[in-house]
Structure formats: structure tokens, C-alpha cells
Image (cartoon, rainbow, N blue to C red; front, side, top):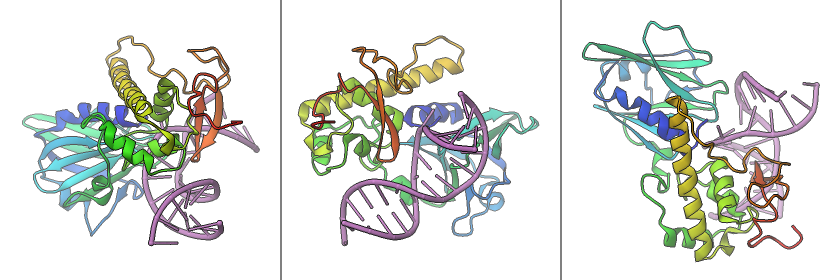
Length: 270
DNA sequence: CGGCATGTTGCGCA
DNA sequence: TTGCGCAACATGCC
């Protein structure tokens, strides 16, 4: 389930790989592992030391003693730590076995839909370099966001999904943040004013923070309040005003919103 | 069976 | 040239 919060939680789990040495990486799936410039899982990764596991937006980056590995989870990707001898998980597409002192671990990449990618590279890849600021790591520069939104005529919902604007915002986060900000998702981005940008930034921060907290609570078996207030509730009453939540397609993605309380800047007749 | 899904990219068109 | 909408990717689930 990967938007910024889920990828961040995965990154924290994989943090236990820091300092470990790669023993072997095996994949039976040439769609997940993209060969670039003749890279090879065996010769390029065996023996490498994992210095760090980082993230920007929805991308994970393993920093090795020599080179990098980039992992994108697509729509249904996930990493799970197991023991090397454990059976393959359902939909397991790739495994990376590592050793740290006496401890051995096996990181399993699962991905039913196989939209994810595992890329070995000697330097940062273009997709990583093209990412805009990460709202969780870098914070949100509201004056900059206001300027950038002013350049774009597309619906605000579509613009928020642009990874070069804010890295890591996905469909659910955009929906939830706009509901919090009480802004109609169809509104042209350029119509946003300083107050709108402040509300959007606050909504994004809140949704991201709560979703990370929720996902971690689930992993640890703790109870937590679900972070989503409107996503998945089309046809049901809005949690804030009680009006019926609507669903429509914006920028090719299903978009839910409340036509009554997300009325700011709503298009005429919409 | 039809429709929908937390993402990205490439193509055709204006 | 640029921006935009949309199909495609591959598979599961309701």
C-alpha cells in the first residue's frame, strides 16, 4: 500500500539491514528487476555493504559501499524481513539475503501486480533526481508551493500528484488533504491563494503523520484511529457535514470529495 | 463477468 | 514545443 507513509514505514523496517553485507540477490522476475547498463544481481550486489536505507517520495534507496539500489513499490509492492530458509511468500518476486556478524536476514520483495521496480545503479537515477521536496523530510515550503501552483491550470488534485512538485503525495493523501482543506479537487491549481496553500500544507502534514502513526500501530498490533476520513466513503455521509460523498475521475484517478463542505472555489454548476 | 484499485509512463492529439 | 487525457502495464478482489 505505498504512498509516502507506507514507504516510510517500510524504510524504517529495512533500517535493520544497515551495516549488513549482501550475500545474494535472487529474482525470477525480469519485470521487477530492470537490467540497466549490463548490471547483474550476482556480480554487482554480492559482497556489497548496505550503508544506509533512505527514501525520497515513494522511492527507496539502498546506499551501498559501492553504488546504489533503488526500489519502487508500484501499487502493491512491499518488503518483509524473514529468515533465509523461510518459504517464499505469496507473490514474492525477489529476495535479498544479507549477513551482519552472525545474524542472517532475508528481505523479501512481494508485488502481486508487478508495477514495482528494483534498479541497480552506480549513481542516482533520473527518477530519483527528478523528485521534488519530500513533505515529510524537507517540510513544505508554502511560498514556493503557492508560486508553483500559480503556474498550473490543471485541477489542484491532479497537480498534487506531480512528484516533481511534492514527492510522495499519492491519490489517497491528495484526497484526504483536500478534504481537510475544504477545497474542491476540481479547482484549477492557479486559483489557490495563500490561505488555501496553508490549508493544503497543513492537511498534507496531518494526513501523512497520522497515516505513518497508524501503519506503525498496525504492525505492532496496537489499536489506532484509522487516518482516512473520506477515501473509500463514496455514497456515505460526509464525516464533517453529513452530505453525501461523491466520486468522480480527475486526472485518470478515482477522486472522492464532499460537494458541500469542499466548496471553496468550486466551479460554477459543478 | 464487470469494474475498480494506494503508481508511472508513453503515445497521440490540440 | 508543451501540456493534457488516456490507455497500458498485471493481477487481485468485490
